[in-house]
Amino acid sequence: MIAHGCYWKKCTFCDVNLDYIGRYDPAPAELLADRIEEIVAQTGQNGFHFVDEAAPPLLLRDLSLELLRRKVKINWWTNIRFEKTFSADLCRLMAEAGCIAVTGGLEVASDRLLKKMKKGVSVAQVARVARDFTQAGIMVHAYLMYGFPTQTEQETVDSLEVVRQLFEHNVIQSGFWHQFAMTAHSPVGRNPEEYGVVCTGPEFKGFAENDLYHEDSEGCSHEQYGAGLSRAIYNYMHGMCTDWLVSEWFEFSVPEAAVSPFMIEQALMQKGKEEEMQMGCRLVWLGNLPSFENSVKKRKGKGKAADKAKLVFVGKHENWELTGHKDEIKWLHNQFSSFLVNSSNKKTLGKLAEDYQKTFDRSFAGFMRSQPWKTLRQVGLLLIK
Ligand code: SF4
Image (cartoon, rainbow, N blue to C red; front, side):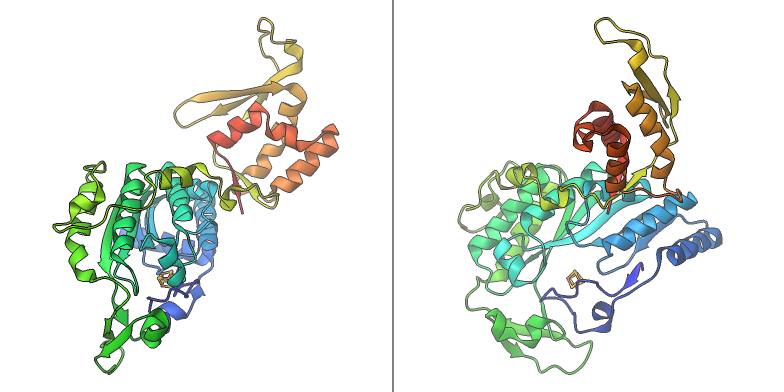
């Protein structure tokens, strides 16, 4: 475990009143890395399944930095919430530190019901976060739910349509549908009427006998959808039939999906708040230090050679160069050691911007639009909160 319990502990279907969820107790990243190194030394195993209920993103950040700093090579995977703290850059950092898969709850894939279950995420946000994990090379498995109190037939069909689109755009690669179960230790189990259902027994007799029956007069008859949902996801996971109408998966007549067929495409095009630039973010460079060279051959019509310089990077698979104005490239070269994972002189984007403005007496925003900066961001200069 990275942390005992769940830092969120709000989902209304979850056993938040029990210790294993409700008592959040994280371990510091250094201690986790010590334990990991010890387990690798004792067992020779380097695959770790962190069995957290929902691993906290900032602790995953710290652990990733610590593993990279110590050059510990492991593969790991864990449960997460699809929350906006998982920026594209954090996903890349985690991948570099050995994360190969995450599992997380999309649950009913309906904004109305996600709100009712206090999941704290929206479908659009899940899509963008899952996309960022996938693009970083981390596989995404979604826990899906049907039969939440008051869920209608239309909402069940629509949630399958959302899941179909997520597979179609390859932002999730795996998933499983569970039918909602009302437990005595969850907020719904404790106050069923508040969620529109009636508890019909049995009398709660203790910790392990915690499943309660309920009647959901507002919702549909949930059990009958399980087989169709499972058939659909089995095929989607094998890359098949994402072009079928979702109504075709059921052996009885259901309405067509009412959500837009472009819902996920549009969500992926939107810039979420999670992608806004943060001046407080730390700059992290995952490669080697580049070398500086000021001898760039003059190319026809490309200005004077004397004004240009380049940084030469030695990569894992190939070497590459970054060319730009000599004064800026030299300045950038001087900054690089502060971007390294083990730097004692860590730098935020805000500090870098200040330094740039002091050195050149011009706005950093212009430099951020320049090709050298864009290239560096693309190849792995990360901004980590
Ligand atoms: S469902 Fe997951 S995220 Fe929600 S409270 Fe339970 S453990 Fe936490």
